[in-house]
Length: 369
Image 1 (cartoon, helix red, strand yellow):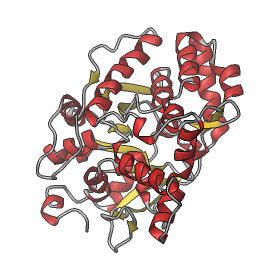
Image 2 (tube, rainbow, N blue to C red):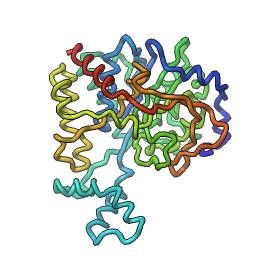
Image 3 (cartoon, helix red, strand yellow):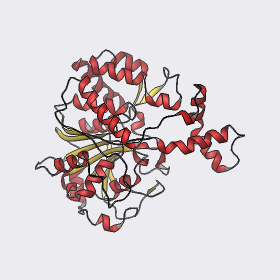
Image 4 (cartoon, rainbow, N blue to C red):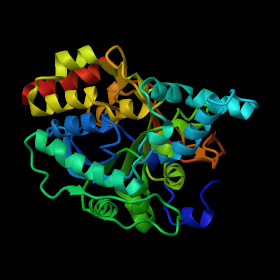
């Protein structure tokens, strides 16, 4: 196992029957903390706005800011550029690297930028930007955050014995331990540092907590998960989530959430003009920070994946995100899935109803305008 046994012994073992009970799709209003790297790109803002526009179905008990950074790409991006501009790859490893980064390098070149000119925020900058962006979304909706927005970790886990005690982690613990006959759902739409820290500080929160996380490939897939930003940034936190036994609804980004594409004509027809929030989401779509980071100037004909809406979709109407129960995998140190025997259960999505999901968002934007 990737997580040492002494760490895992801190967590209660559940029976399959109890795990099945906790992983039943919700049938009424849910208690929710949204854990988000909101300023990372543009999808978190859609998810947060949609959740806030669904008060009859979602009781938001907090919004917590996660760190984020693309800094891990810098060395390989620079190396790929060097190979491409000095005669091309000479080994299989160099060819694989160039294949992974060619589009990025060529995109930057098309707008006259060198990879060294790309600014990557640090994790603490990412968390602070996300915190401020959460407040921006509340403001665009004309809603007061009411003290329910919390700063999270300024960095990633470096040791499972040193969880990061932050306002976000403390709030997750407090709400998970609050007396309630309803579980607390934490919708994780970034890395899971805040959640992992909360679990390590107070393992007993697993008794009434369900983590709903989007990242990575389906657990049946043999591909490496390093392409998933949510998963790769904090490897220890990601591994802990699959191994500690916390009830976990896993919503794969690749192949599943990746179906949640939206186009510029969609934005112009259904989002722009739908109040301050609609205009802001449209602005984000047409000023996507990832386009600038990757040198994408010709975005008008492209679609964009609004990955993080999948979490809110499953909470609102689980039938929009078909799922089943299966053994939780182990995420190894190389970021591949492993499937040892005698694993606890998790719920995993295998499809989405893209049209129904966006229709609900559009209707709620229009009603709020």
